[in-house]
Length: 142
Image (cartoon, rainbow, N blue to C red):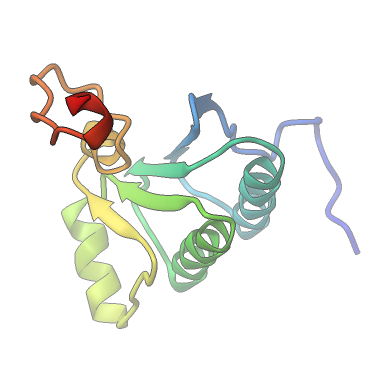
């Protein structure tokens, strides 16, 4: 039985792209059906777009229960199978403590403190630091 929809996007989390990276921001409580829809939307976007990375910002989430933890791990696993990396950003200390107390792990997910570091981890950073010197390639020497 399908859940009735109130509006076309009322029960969806937006999945915007920043170049080849999907940037998802979760706010407040994420109901199970919304989490499942998010997983489907992200997987679909990766399959049909040139996506190499997924950043999921959970700084606005107060509780990550076992279901949401599993969905996040499944998103990372699906993304990895389609050659995209997933980085989880903004985990609050209380959320981290709860995950440890529940014995939940998030396999396949890199975790960082904020979105800027997540983008840096994926190589799409917004940092204003000068780039690291690159090694000379054979073609550069000719």
